[in-house]
Amino acid sequence: MSARSPVADMTVTGAFRAVLCIALLLGSVTACVSPGDAPGPGPTTSAAPRTPAPRTTDAATGQQVLPQGLVGRWQSDVKDSDASLTYRFRADGDYTFVGVLAYDSPDGIVQVTRTSEGAARVEGARLVLKPTRAATSRRDPSDPQGDYVARPAPLTTERHTWEVTGDVLALTDKEGLKVTYERRSP
Image (tube, rainbow, N blue to C red; front, side, top):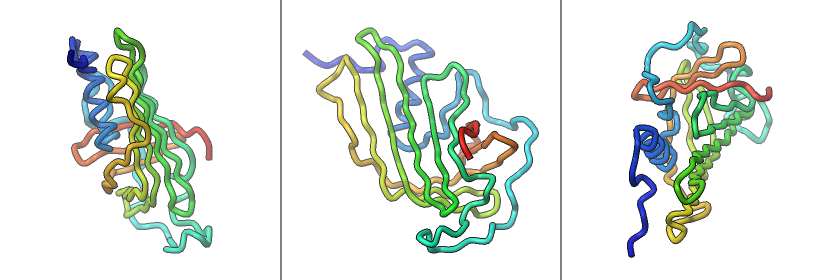
């Protein structure tokens, strides 16, 4: 008897969930957009500074590495999405990321989680995230034998164009897909 695929009997929504799952597993989480959303210009925003902020290479000193406007906890604001993406950027350049995709299936809730942490730096309008640790977990009631917890994930450097306007952070990946995040704490 073979295990059912978590993407069997897909609808358009199911296909979208499968794409989100793959994106979370591969670390390309900024490609997660709502169905029907198209990449392109968002609301008018002020661009990130074009020159790098003064920085130190010694995170242990606690000196400012990231621009103050980027520092804090940010959560994705994609409405009616099964995915929740959260970044925390610290002034010293450390960052953490948690991405959770959870959706109903005939056998229960399927959940895929990706976590990473590492060093962030700003190069003008470019945000570079270099993970030092990354892991994925999966729970699928239709395939419990395939479940895993904190499986090491590739340490792939990510590059995003970034903009902060008020309490909204926009990250755009190299394919032009944009995800916006709302500030949850300074």
